[in-house]
Length: 141
Image (cartoon, rainbow, N blue to C red; front, side, top):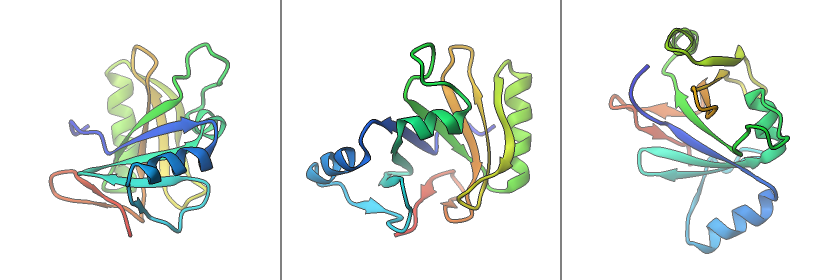
């Protein structure tokens, strides 16, 4: 697994309110065609706002106060097969696999794991996002 974070996803209680806040900060949305999620390009990575309940479901965790932190880190892969490889590496390193790699509703391929402290990581291949040679994530306009 390359040493990088591609995206931080914040699980928000009110997507419209959260988007309005970042808009008021002067941030410009990226990938505006996405439905039910808001993306911002932040340097060579991305910040996503996503409903907290949906993020908990995607990570395979329950949002009952016993472990889900309301956010997920993401490592975007260059290929679909790299997702499987990274999940195997993570498991060998001591990660707990929460969801095996699978086709996603947004047209990609992803799985999730937690580190030893329970922080959720999504490993994803997204055909709509570009990764540069140095691992920077570039969102579509």
